[in-house]
Amino acid sequence: MATVNPRIPNLQDIPTPFGVPLSAIYKQSFAYITVKDRLPIILTKVIDTFCRNKNQIIDTYGQGAEEDIKHIIGFISQLKNEIVTNKTLKLLRLNNQVVTNDAKEWNKYLEYRTRVDGQVPTWFNTKWLYCECYMYRVLAQEIGLTSTISNYDPFETQKRDVFINSLESMDAVASYLKNIIRSEEHDQELNLKNDFLRLLKLTLWSNRQDLSISAGSPLSQIGNPLDALESLNDNIIVNDSECAWHIVSERTGKNVENIHMVLDNAGYELFTDMCLAAFLIRILPRAKITFHPKVYPWYVSDTMVRDFHWTLEYMNILDRYPNVQTLAHIFQDYLTRQIWRIQEEPYWTGPYDFRQMKEKAPLMYDQFSNAKLVIFKGDLNYRKLLGDINFKYTTSFTAALGDFHPTNILSLRTVKSDICVGLSLGAAESLLEKDKDWMISGHYGIIQTAVHSHNT
Image (cartoon, rainbow, N blue to C red; front, top):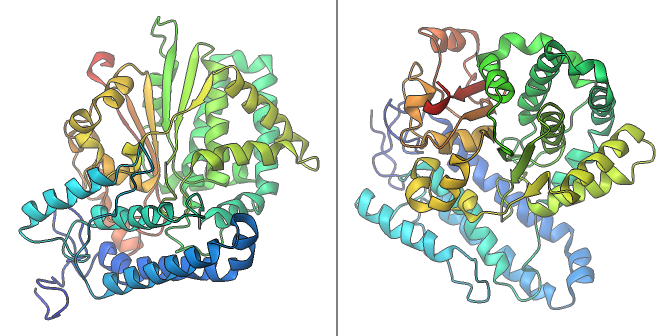
């Protein structure tokens, strides 16, 4: 049913229909709530960050930063107004000082969407995935164009606070991981499998620590998260962990077994991702792990390269947490010996979903094609895997991936947007009866695999 709103033409007072991309044009969708409420709140908190930390920023970046801060606050205020009044998206200003800047690609995509939509995209009337990513990208671009604070991350303090506030929980995990890495009795396959499945669930549930969903409100992990895993088993609504173990444990005969991890949130989640990666090295001595962070500050808490290195540096000075400190030494050694590596790739903050990777980033697609496994963390990566299309819930994960089949895929995601595939018949309806917010609460998780044809 269409509702009358002069600012939002064709606003539909219905949930997102099946078979179409998520969009704020559907009033009974999380996309609508996000564009209407959550994105403006996030931008307001960025303004608060600049205002609150103004003197500290000036001390760090120099007196010229005062004018840059004033400019950015004005830009964000205008951007927030454009969102709530459903104005058109604009071309990004180009930064000719940065060789790798992808603003031109974003501008090409705006022209493409204008052709597809039949008009210049507006915040409520275009694809949710596009306009939400655009908000973070245009903010990063404007900060990057300043003369003094071009490298400033307005979300940095929040990300670090999540990490620091979760130290007690991380120490419990560190004690567990340190023991299984060093213990020879864990060489038995049953023990290796059980520990792998446990760490898989640990890094799944760590994905609940998402500052973009909390709109920047403080988060932390409390207690021993390992103790809570069994109680959460019923909340895993798709569980392909046995298949994930088969992929990981199968010997390929290759001299090097490459595994890629496309990261999501910094803080506690990044720590658990590192723990899983360390265990993969433990069971696959020829493995090399490549981590893929974001190039720009993204979705409030997404991991950047600087967050990765800060995490290891901070872990290394934690004398009160010797288990965490020990892991810092192990993790840093992996990086030094290039068993682990970090690879920046602008595609993760680009305008395209992953189903377009073969065409838009063929070198990345080829790199994945030569890998044993690619692990995608989190809700945004899941949305990009599916092209942000609201498939019927019983659609298979493999079918929903479209043309994206470079190798074995593993998605670890707590459900925080109204898109989900691979459910059994009637499962979505049962979940809705039990919890009307099951798709946006983060209370439910997915461990989902797509096995490449050469492994079947």
